[in-house]
Length: 187
Image (tube, rainbow, N blue to C red; front, side, top):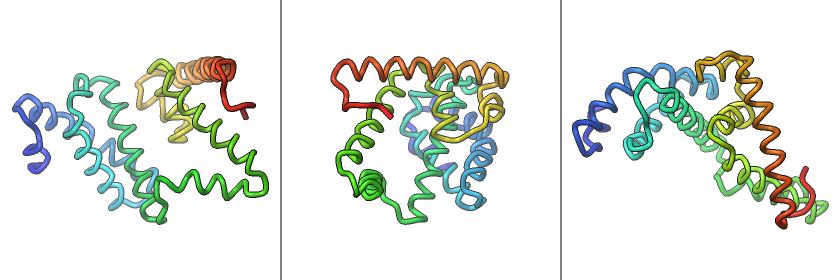
């Protein structure tokens, strides 16, 4: 932790970092280990998360806030996915190539899939945070409603309603993008 603290500019950030570290380190390890199924790799993901946090202290709210917890959970899950990719030898840039290889029999279809993927990512990014967070947890991180509810400290029913609303809003955003000259049909 001393290395992380030395990376921070002021005492206020150092104090906040220590409190965040103490409060969330086990929670983050649990999330990473669930994804990685390897306690040592999970520890690596947590350390990379805290390293990233030193560069983004300005993006954290109060230590005990749901926003801080969600921010850290998103980072650790991304770091875990990065570790899986590294372990399997997959580079980030390879997604495009793998999609194209899967659709080699029809290059136009491959292009449409790729464009639709980009449109969906763009639309998800435009969702209000309350909906974007649950949508990302559900579909990107593949968490159950119960797990999302625990992270957000709301009921599973609330999560279900937010996911439903997120899907409706996403559908509307995608339709608007299509009308503005999107890539064609949406999958």
